[in-house]
Image 1 (cartoon, rainbow, N blue to C red):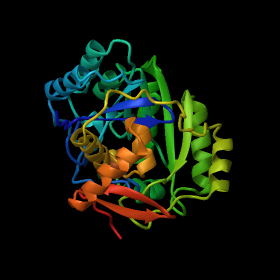
Image 2: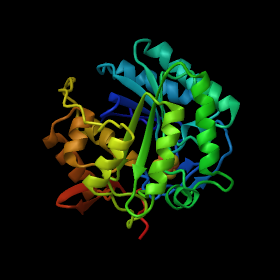
Image 3: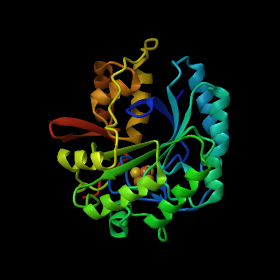
Length: 317
Ligand code: SF4
């Protein structure tokens, strides 16, 4: 079966073998981050709607389960945009629990809707919430995250603090640094003070590892990353080296479908595709070569290692 809303599993340093659910079905987000791995935001909005009905997403999840894959370590709501924009998020979470009672549910969020008590109530149904907050300096926040008008870092921080008061699960805060944009000492000082108040279960400081929407967005150097991680008591988000269970032999068409869906979400190298999807690098290489030949994917050579991305991605200069 061809999946539109279920993708992966992908290997995540924090979540293990994580099966993704896309709650938007398109590039719909309340931000248009310069580093976004899934391309430019097509619809920039704060309006909550049932962009994809829970029923459609859960039907695909049920079909995926029927295919007999090993259960994932985590089901992660995210995908092509901000999952909290979907008003059916709570039904998706409860449906995941019905289908996979032993698998925890995580939500990736840019935190922009956290001031809404209804969003906080729905998010609190998850086991792990991974909010991002890259800068508490307004100019940096706007330059990096390019949010909907009216959204500022103070509101996002306030929403997160409110959420923390009512959430029993774990919060993994993520901060992404881009060189010359939000790696200032002013931002580090404000985030240090904020983390003391929020007390997240984990902080991850990361930088760009793949091409973003805007080509000139650059990663910070190792020293900067280390300095920030130390100051914020952050983990280093290691990629788990766990051997993935290799399922039954997959047909070439099935491997191609999985890679097509995975590349639509983020650019990856052949090695990353192999690890994430539990297939050999040889299988990944063959499939990605066919996608490139069919003009469904393109490769970009970043520091000697080709990254492949879907032709749906548009890279700004
Ligand atoms: S990185 Fe996340 S918050 Fe930013 S534009 Fe992409 S999907 Fe939206």
